[in-house]
Image (cartoon, rainbow, N blue to C red; front, side, top):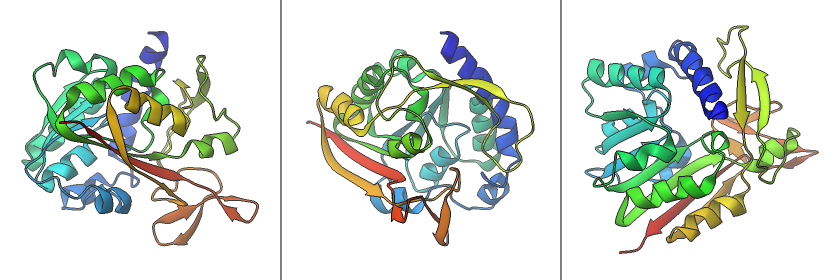
Length: 258
């Protein structure tokens, strides 16, 4: 509870900064620009008419971007400030969406009888979760039979190369830092994160009865958000260990049996 409350406070504070940042480009989004990146757009293509649940949605840009592509969307985040901002954007832009303020682990209380065709999560979400077993339970419980889970996430090797543990530790990593956007102020927040290796992610989902259908690793990030990244192509940021490219992002698809 201590860790969750500290993280929630940090994300409540970050939301106002993020809404004004060039990194998130809310003005561009309002003008019709999508917040989705090339990896997820290429891999998650069949969303029109589908019920899509976005876990850890922040203030909803991806959620609303999927709605623009025809999905019936629900976004979930534990930051009340972020959810208020997401609802405001939805209302102001006339994009139909449902946003719910909830911890991932508690969301089952809201969706006992509501099932989704797609459950989605993306970049920088898993490190805020202390337990992937409970997370995977939520994913599985919220999917319809035959439904798809899709995630795109920063590769855990990144955190290892920055000095953190690759393998999961029960005790969190505590840090005091500002936010990652270009307009970050000097104010820092105490935050707690956890490492999750690929094996833990795959096993957590498999143990809940989901079948892994695809796992891809990418040598680039669409975001310039780690130290030492090099933009080799426009919008593609690479990280090197010596002169060798390292994995920066991975994506995973899984299906729930009929």
